[in-house]
Image (cartoon, rainbow, N blue to C red; front, side, top):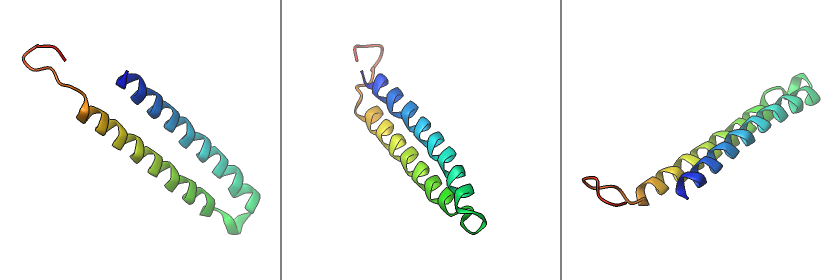
Length: 74
């Protein structure tokens, strides 16, 4: 169950980061030369933050997941 949750969170985070990057490109072209890079940098920071949140969640799930000891049960 935990592995499914990790996969779901990471897959959706990567999709969201990709969509934000594409939208930032459209926003830059709509704003013209003076706005180039501002929106993209903001959305890039949001993407980095989402990625860090997913890594923290994945680490927390790994930390609380029971470990096998000497081939015993989980």
